[in-house]
Each structure stands twice: as structure tokens, then as C-alpha cells.
Image (cartoon, rainbow, N blue to C red; front, side, top):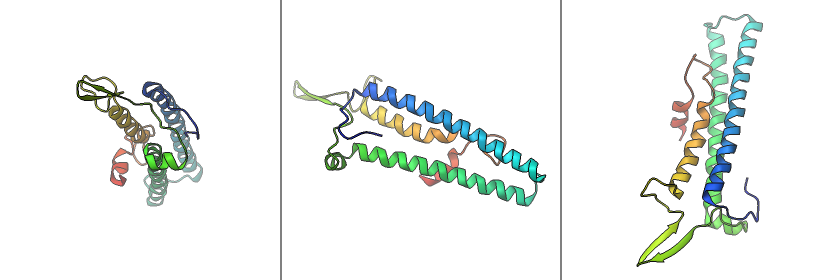
Length: 162
């Protein structure tokens, strides 16, 4: 979370911090996913219910939907926050400083941004950075194995919501 009065940072410095936080979040989500799988397995063993029983499959589907809604909620909050930290009206209303310093230079009748909005040579750009954040938001759903099948993740269900 960005604090009021936080100074703008270099894009590459912010991106590095972002990657650290995403890595830690993915690890926690992966651990949480394993814990949910363990709880489900322990419940099945304690209840001595067949894994192919209609009631058990309905319960797994119920838990599966809770997991999907959790992922949807997490991504929605991240997208909302991204919109807020980039919205000039919200920045002004909350007296926040911009997220990045972007330098603007006029060179031979051409406007040059540093960092660039788009990269022509494959180097870092604002667009690539924001696109990377969006990919990271959606990548969180790949850190947990599905509950209802032995392989796969929840990416297809998440695509249906966004």
C-alpha cells in the first residue's frame, strides 16, 4: 500500500519491490493451497466418504467455488488499487505524490519521455511495467492446484470473471 506523502521512485526500483512482494504473496498462496488440500484430504478420511460419492463431489465443488471467488476478489482489489494509484483525480484528492518520476524532454521537435511509454528497442517502458503488474495479478491463480481434479489451475475460471 502506498502511503500519503510517499515520494516518487524510479520505475525499475518500484518494479523490483513489486516482484519481491509478488514472490512472497505467491509463496503464501501456494502454502495456503497446500493447506486447503490437506484439510480436504483430512476431512475425507475422517468422514470415511468415497471420493466418487455425489455428496463428496458436491462438497469439493462448494470449496472449489470459495477458492475461485477468493481469487476473483484478490484480483479485483489489485485492479482497483492499480486504478487508484494511477488516477490523477484520486492522487490529487488524497494529496499523494505520483508513483513514478517521468521526465519529459524536447529534442529536435520531438517529445521524449524517460522512462519511455513504449519501448522500441525491447528495453523497459511504463507500458511493459504496467502490463507486467497485470500479468502478476492473474498469475496468482496458478500457484494452487485445483481441488476438483489432480492437475491444473484456476486460470480458465478467472478469465470468465474478467
